[in-house]
Image (cartoon, rainbow, N blue to C red; front, side):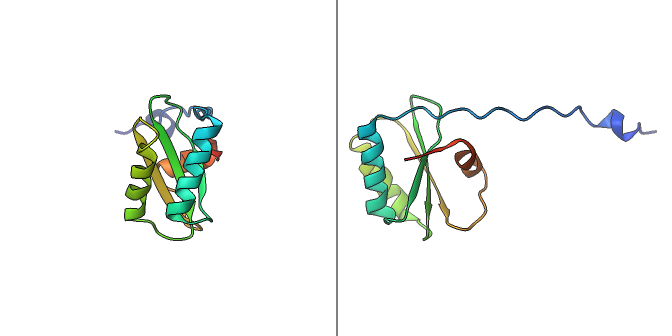
Length: 110
């Protein structure tokens, strides 16, 4: 009725290679880091992990659980950076899920 297990499962593929994030200018990186630290706290760790030059993908690791602060931070960033911005926040010590895993693996700390 059913085939063996080897016939049902597809062949395994090697893992994808990490993609380097799109580099930011020194002025942009300094502005982003300063803004995030002002809004989310001085202990915030900011990672740039997006490889698309038309948008900005950031991951922030903080000791608190930010809610509305992320929107406030985006608003401040949009004052100088004119492209779509995505900010993902993780509370320090919790397990990374979804896109936060990509940020931890291939992101660059600002």
